[in-house]
Length: 299
Image (cartoon, rainbow, N blue to C red; front, side):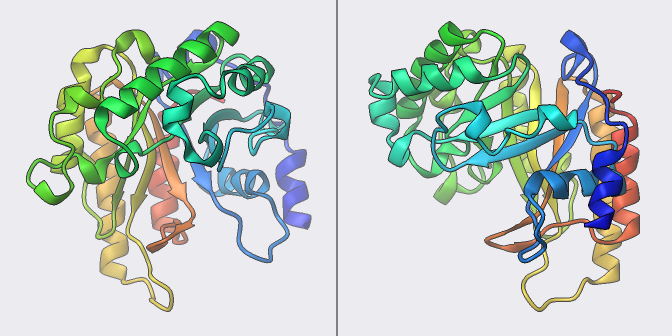
């Protein structure tokens, strides 16, 4: 825990930026998962990542179901650490149809009223796996209205899954994107989760391009809410050539985003998942992400 003391005792600033954050500057951050057996929480692991690949000004956290309050959620410690929050949750038992009909309005209202102003939030991220477009639109519109009425200081929007946005892949293509869009009046931003198991620039991929071309005319800020490059399966060792390709992909995406300022948030997936380990363990990759962070909203 000695290294943790160095991180948490440093002079982390209070939240700054006001309306400029994620609107007139690029918000750079990460989602993290703590190492099993480390004794550290995800927030503590985020603060360690901030030391190695930051400055990271925003953390994405996940609650498997709607928390009763912000103080009892996975994001509870963020304000005290000077970290901005992007929170994701799902309705009880994943019941998006019931949520769209108002079944959980009282719980959603209680949660929203407890949330500090300026928090970014979504519900049922990556909906393409679990429902139709019209079902998601009905869910998103209703939940957004409840959240907005309870706490207009929350930044709310949908988050999509890039895997479903490549028209050249009919087996997992959403079809008409308009059927998945709730409308600008129901979204303060729109996000995308994108992964490249074999390193490649996200911004050149068909899935990202299709999502961007549809969402850009909406006028709302565009966020990359999960971004992973190069996954290592269990037992695999990193290949130096692929590590270098990851560095090059991050740099290429950074250059593209710098020229397309509609992208206003970029969060690396510094964690593990079903497919393996996406974390930036090597110094060259961390240095590439530090260069991204250096261009972002100032902490």
